[in-house]
View 1 (cartoon, rainbow, N blue to C red):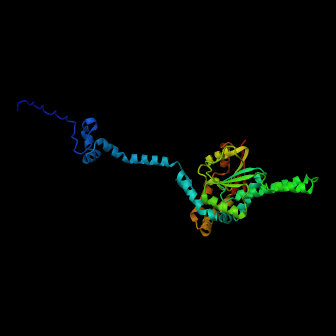
View 2: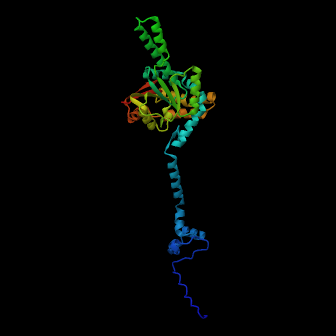
View 3: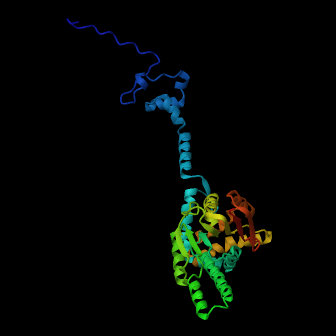
Length: 361
């Protein structure tokens, strides 16, 4: 030992329970060596695997639970995607359902009216006429028609109000017998310019292609006065509270992912005293007719979809969506839960379709 140097004290003996940390491996927590497990656990398979990999035995225990952890992560991802619902007979998330339904109507928009005539043998026209007579709008009525892309309900509404307005003018002229011809003519011409008597119908649909078809149809048929088109979601309507006198949705509510939200929105945008009307396929009450209806629906309608529109899958979904839709009494209860009063329904053709009605009081 040289002069001026100090003798180094021997390194402290490593405890028997400590294990060395291999080079390049993660250091033990807070500088302490990894603890040595009892002999029984050291002989276990997970410990040997961990030792071979140079890992802490605690990590090995975590690795054994990796499958459960991955399953938990999958569940979290599923929750992030949204709760499950149905698309026809398939189980999907709500986000997936909205996307699929959008594509269905994007695909069928151009052939929608032709397919309606083919599937129902034209009876859908009668059902819609009955809906308008049940509504019985008067001049000045403000109507919101949701999921009404191709305009069938809107055009019927305009025709109905025009007829009612014409009857009003005739009654007015009868009471003006003592007026001169010029005064009667001027009064008639002034009123004629307001053929709808300040009535308006707003067609709201979430699908751009359906609205496009409706606008083209309106232009072709000459409908413009008192008619507007709005891109919007039935579950989150882009309108103020207490705005409309009547809310209609014809063959559209079963394609809404959250029916409860759509009903709440219908209640919100209606004025006090306003009326909710829903025309939709429903559940057939006659057992024999029900079997025949199922046979026609599943064996004929998808074939018609393929032949006429070149789209089997979309019409297969439409058939399945009818079977998954709530029956009459259940839908009535949902409408009441949304806040409507005097809720009732009328079955048409033994329940193939039903018209539900309710009032915001």
